[in-house]
Length: 308
Image (cartoon, rainbow, N blue to C red; front, top):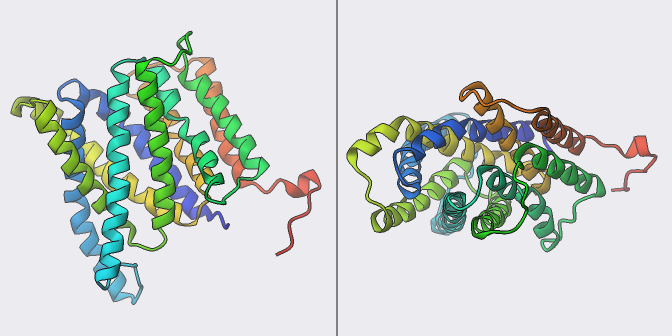
């Protein structure tokens, strides 16, 4: 499979935007509950992406380019199906992450959630997409890097919160593979909008059932909700769909796992949190894993390329 460098850059930008949302999530959590925050950012994403859809349609129409928007009932049904499946998975993963972090440390939650970088290649085996040894080595390198970056707790026992975070990692891995399956056949912006419409509806229902948000709390959290809704949800998840069109899903998960690195850097730059030498080493290993995953090392190792 061709690993287009432009698409890899889109995924890199996606992980950067997710990572910088760390500050917004921290601020939002001080004022509103998890489902209120998730509902708010998702509705903002839908509102942001709706005019984007129309602008992009006009742009592609003027240039005679097919942007894979649905032209008939069958294609619209396919888009709705893709959006519903990915939206349910995204909502479940985000909810599991927020629930789990209440019962475990942030460092353990970050490490366990990032295990989707390992789960993706494991699940890919069942889809007849066997990763190469080089990719497996990069996964191991990234795993060590994430451990050095995120893990500070001495205990590695699987507590209740850890189990929720592990479920979150599994759900994110499945969502990555689902988007990989659908992204090449539908308009990426429409799929992103449909996905967040599903998340918005589900999280709003859960918010009304489980939480009691006040107007003042929402007002205080609004800047954080707007930032996450526009940049993390509206832009980053759309870039994820675009980026995964031409990238091996295992490599895509590796690139997107850099979210942990950017979260740590954002905390250092904006919140004044310091990175220890151990954490800096973890960042370096994760960047090294991404670089090695894109290089063809077979000539250096004396391995011949397979004949077409």
